[in-house]
Length: 220
Image (cartoon, rainbow, N blue to C red; front, top):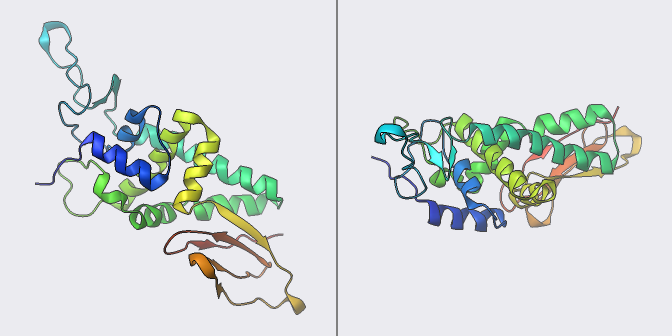
């Protein structure tokens, strides 16, 4: 039987990974609850009693009930993720089509799953009791989004951008002029970064500590 994560050590380790300290740590704990997970009694307030002495809710974080696990936070985080990417695009210029591609590529489930696994988030997720083995991709992607949602609710967009940069999900848009319209091959750079050119002479570089996500975004 899998061991259920405990709140205090989970929050402490996660805060080190994302390099952000929560004011309301229960938000981060909620982000780690997969749908259908069972929260350990005594870890958080889950013993509220209604009329007749029956428990009001088994899945709860503080006084906030979370019957759907981290799904509600993931909705907030999905919007915050997209907003952070679009803000970065707006400051850097570019077409609306390029903004759409940036959000589609970097905000995709595949990208989020890669980031979650690279940073070892799987061991912190409180899974559904029936789920055995590795965390499913959809659960991992939702958990990464839920982390962004927790950060946003705790202190706003600037902190979301900071955490995205820490995890390697915030792009740098690099413009290059390629002679005769020829596209250069991807080039390995220092610090685990990769850059290069697509057919429109634009590349999105996503810097990360280890494996690097590279997504191209064309200019029309």
